[in-house]
Length: 116
Image (cartoon, rainbow, N blue to C red; front, top):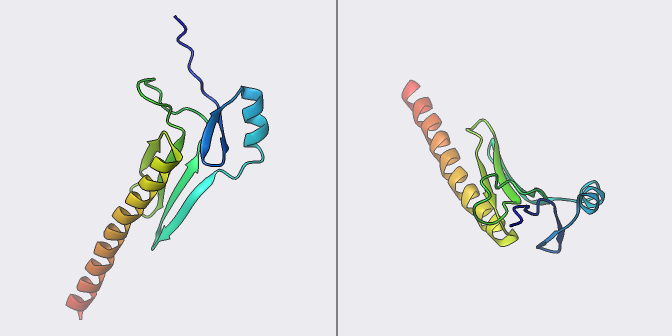
């Protein structure tokens, strides 16, 4: 039984294509891997194509897309198997972050009013 698993991928359009290490290296150096970057107040939500399988458990599909949050906020990382999942995940994380930013802004305004 062959336990080897494909690890390297490139994008053709929105489809991930398994390739050799050499093909991956040539593509990776020139590729724009950004899918979506959204700034919500002081937090940035970034979704990219990783090109490498990050499913280290080897159970389930390769996880080759990633959404992360950066800024004055707990950094989060979510990984996906397909472009469509990554786009949907990005939207969900942006929505969640918008709620958090709105609550913090509301709290600051409330504290400012109480101090006066």
